[in-house]
Amino acid sequence: MFQKRIQEKYELLSPRFRVLADFILENTLDVGFLTATELARRVNIDPATVVRFSQELGYSGYRELSREIKRYVNKQLALRYQEGDPGAPGLAGKIAVLTDELSDRILNFKVDAPHIATITEILHAAPHIYVLGKGDSFGLASLWVTYLNFIGHPASAVHANLAQAALMLRDAAPGAVLFAISLGLDPDTEIGQLVSAAQSKGIKTVVVSTSPTLLPARQADINLNLPAETPAGYPSFDTLMALLSLLWQALIALDEKKAHSAVRETADALSTLIGQQDRIPAHDIAAMQRLWKQE
Image (cartoon, rainbow, N blue to C red):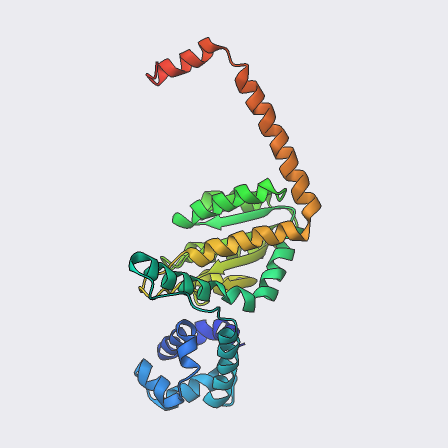
């Protein structure tokens, strides 16, 4: 597919070619209806550059690249749900529109279903999953690790700093998987470097990113690019949360027996802890409350 070709060639592209590549990846539905001249005008380059760019990717010219983009766009359009009622009064009408727009972004998962299935199988086979994040994405990594452990998949959240990365590289067993989250709120170069270091140690790397041209995505063994652009112009995290939930549910579907057993054991442990709470003497509770000035 054209997305994969662009990703593989991105580091070698000239600055002008990179601008064109970014435009195609971020506005694919529009590009599917543009001629070479129209596309050149939108990016402020000459049509010959569009042709040379296509050839740089291995196509005979823009016509061949355009045909592939059109096939992708047709597949996308065929999956669109019926729209809501934007004419509903007040906020409800706006929410109807926002819901349709969110559905449009999530519908990409239908196209990517085989790719998501491959990632699920890799995660399922891993003796341990290291979920790498930085800044805000580390919070999402920690949350997802809790859910993975809940269904019996050993996982740890790793912050993208040298100390934690060194411990991960030291302790990772054969077959371990590094799952990195790259929101694209900054270049995430640290995550990209750690992904590369993990690969050198034989760790399988999976990156979920909002752009296939970010360094972590380009470094990964497997990358899944999520649409994050919203009509408001602000990048959104909604598709990332939806994907993490989808992967979690796919892991359950892949091995329901393992998931149910892990959940049952967790519930039993929780019952034990609750039972112990009931046996805490009142004076111990009062002592704790005095420390927090709650008596």
